Image (cartoon, rainbow, N blue to C red; front, side, top):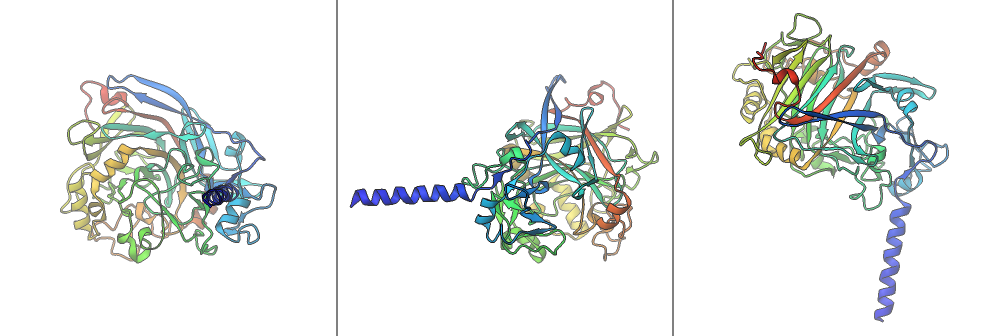
Length: 473
């Protein structure tokens, strides 16, 4: 009897393992995946910087998904009913295709340039148009580069001069898994980081086609914009640079969770449950225009930071005791342009002061603008620092916003609010200027360039910051 029970248990285990393999998200074989090169400089406290050539990978949501031959599993916002009647069958039938370096450019508009990348807004292909992109920095061919930023600074140069109102050329960190979710998926994900899987952020996005290797087809709404499924993917997010040529912000978004959580229901924080979810969707944004300085950032020489030209930005993650293990207490920013260091703007909104992100500034901003302080409720900078300590993946993206037209970045938001009320005006753009259909038709040639990415000890990454006697301007 014991032997029979053992044989039965082994048989069930084999069946379970076979089922996991059969239902796994598979890799396509038509095109061998190649990753575009992207350099990274790592700098010591003495200011010595070492360059290494790493790569980036395209997010899986942009990729061709097919049946292993040439039939699409997903087309025009909808899943194929025969190939994808349920999540397991869909994962078993569908293959995530690779992309060559040439296809990164011709299909996705990703160009390798000197010391960086240029991302195109619209790329015309024989199959239709591609809009924007989202890429992750790699440690090696199968693993994302994990950044640990407490008591360190992160620096890069951005050229946002070609980005119009309603566009967002973004650089940020999210608490994805280094392997793209391979281990956590229990065999359901065969593709992993090499194919850009495992995305999550503090908005708990529902538009991901696969989450933890499982097709997100339950309750899939192909008519929404964007199309969405039942589940979302939540994790902590640190927005270093969200910008176009008219406005910019940097924003921490702490969460009540560790790493990626596949959410449903209240945990996702959708619609009227926004502040009941696991992540702080609003974050604490340092937007100079919103905080009262309307002469700081803009697209000509009258602004202190001129977005018509490339600008280097340095973001410093300050701990309470100056050690890597200390609590995060401040996120500072300064800029370098034309060889001059430009100190961040001072908040001048009534009741708010400071030139960096601190828990106090965030609490004052929420109070002055009448917003819910979900940032504080989710643990503020201390919890954000814990995510930075665990390690986060670096993201480069270019996108438009079909949900709110990017008004939260560069215009009046909410659009129906009085723009003279504190915190409503986020930038100079008109409330009708950010509609994706208009942007894609009018500015298809728009692009953003990110280059000279550096990470290192505080004060190490930007030579202008190290020069003795340098004065802020």
